[in-house]
Length: 309
Image (cartoon, rainbow, N blue to C red; front, side, top):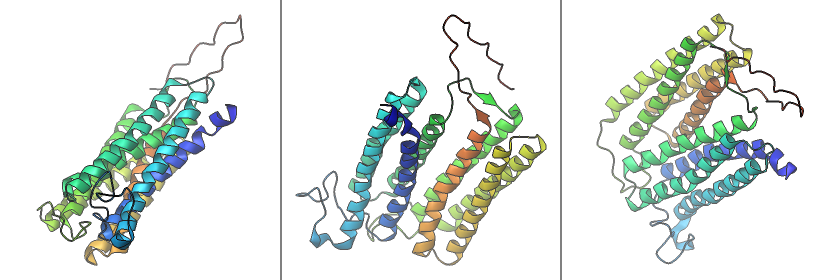
């Protein structure tokens, strides 16, 4: 049991990586026109749960993406078992592992609806947003698994925390707008799939405007953290976020002006997961939860220090 409990954080990290990988495999499905490689769900065909030779490479790509769900399920079960095996057991960690576990079949159902709807662009977008939410849950689980069980202590004043949350909201808005841009573009996942009907140029401009807002907020957050003497880990996390955002923005502009080559679009989708993870890293670098040391029998527990404002 002790060895299982010690595997909690590696398992949570593996789950985080697997969910980011799901974005990449999903991109491969869409960009290769394999979205209906398995034309139905939950079976791959009306008569088989697996792909057949007649379905060719598109069936293999789509079925391979479906197989990753089983990897996520296995990791979720193992992570939950490791959370239960921890001593002392922490309810927050257990419930996070439960939430991540239930999100996996929920994501599978959304994926199934995506296929049954003939790759409706709005459902495809929801499928991606669910992945973003799952990444947030996995990241929180990974970080909480490495923390103590004490009360949260903030290392920055409230205005900095508000700026960090505003930056996080902008990061999510950029990703959501990118999903809408994708739904208006040429890579539909199948040659017969519908588009959302929005003007690609106009919605791309909205997406670009949000990117500029996000970069501005992130740079401001970096300067604010430096000016207020925030921990080096927080300053470094903000710097990494800015670098990742600039890199992602550069890829986005190049792919737009080169008419959306498949490779660059795939890298851009991976970049969205990295931007989101880097955003979460900044939030978590602003606070900590200390390890609570149990008082020896017969002695009063030490008084808690008040949390920093």
